[in-house]
Length: 353
Image 1 (cartoon, rainbow, N blue to C red):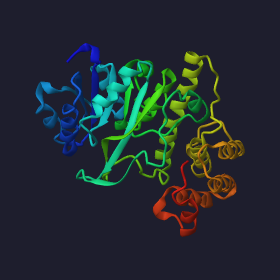
Image 2 (image 1 turned 120 degrees about the horizontal axis):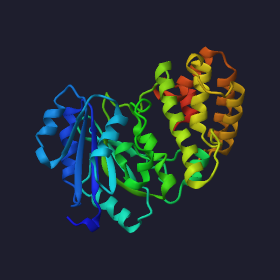
Image 3 (image 1 turned 90 degrees about the vertical axis):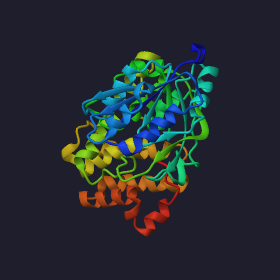
Image 4 (image 1 turned 180 degrees about the vertical axis):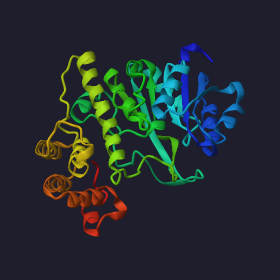
């Protein structure tokens, strides 16, 4: 190991995933990059996770803590790590052996980078490859200075937690991740703030595996539970407030509270306002959200003309229909299994927003 290579910290956050944890740890230890530390944070598991971690002895840095949620585990792992670059690996995922060397080569060649991100192969509960990758192949992963994209849309195409590596200096100012807000979804905080501090680079290869199983948070519909949906919106609002703050304080640029091209966020706000008004705590009225949504649908990038027309009609329908009707439209839109055949034919594979 040489210090000139730069230290890579792979931080594994775990809660009750003892059946998958060993594979995640083994994949981290098996990296073909030499200057490496593996930090494993157990967030108060009550299964066999701690025994699994203890079996690795001094090969890993073990952090045992009370349960506090994903953000608290990420914060504990960040504090315990020393790497110039950090990769937060979910304990049900695992990495390809060449991931570390490929990531660190990019950071070494371009010291200004804030994030290096890559695609993940989707595997099933047993680790067998399924059809598909994350992000999907038809979705272009961005490279370069994406601050104008963040200013206009607040987000961009990126992989889940395990597919992102961060330069420490690009996330240090945003740490700790707010623990009361991000019981889950802490990657949203990191990926949407780090690019303020430097360009990103995409590796268009599958350098890790994302495991699909019954306990996954990603992909679960929260629409049927008003409290869960409101909690998700709190995460969205929290990171957007931080983005406004960073653009102002770091770049000297003022951006609006609601981005003009942030179609998904405006859509979620309108759903919350119309379907769960008892949980809606934001200043924008239905009429205001309708106007913002129509503008976002018109300006959205990478949307087919038919999709654009559908979203324009969608915003009008959600805004004017009774609560029950608005709920039916929203459920048909975002729960693919429940979509009527006509709506499924219209949205099909084209819906990218």
